[in-house]
Length: 279
View (cartoon, rainbow, N blue to C red):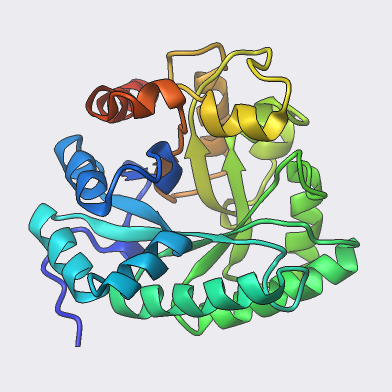
């Protein structure tokens, strides 16, 4: 049985706490470095990519070595990323089945709070069905689910994500609001501020240039993000819009950056200090 020694309970994290998203660091940064940097910079928890967790299981480090590491640094494993294709009832296929099973193991052992989900989803009715069934399975393991809108999938904006979440009608199912995909997508602050509080289950903050630095959207978003306040996005306006909803979920900082990855100590410190200026 898991005996939690950390003061940070993932399922009790509030609106003033920060999570270090998995993709703020690169695959070359191992789990020990991730947890250490999160703790040293005042993050309450980390996000973890399911694929990395599976590798940690294969090496024998997870779950118990990881549990000990998190307890040592007083950090929780708050977020699980990412199930694609809306899971096994959608277009996710065998990979989604593998990742779902691992996500449930993570949630059961570490009492994680949140599961990130992406498309493609297909027609709204089809996507809502798959999303709803995934939420049901996640709920059996104590998780809330965040559907991330991505301009490079067929769930391109907060408007589309909201239609799916509303049609699914699950109390633990909501939307992940990522400022990057808001800014580079529909860029509709009013639509974000209009979301019911319970519809925002995840938040991902970062910064960037108003014009893409790489013409390929996918490459740009996975290599060119910056710390909040270090780019040209209107961070303060997005924070106000999110807070206007009344949501109380923690703030995850997701800023994949080839420049930042080369100097992770400076990069992660900048993420934490930058975001706190807007809170």
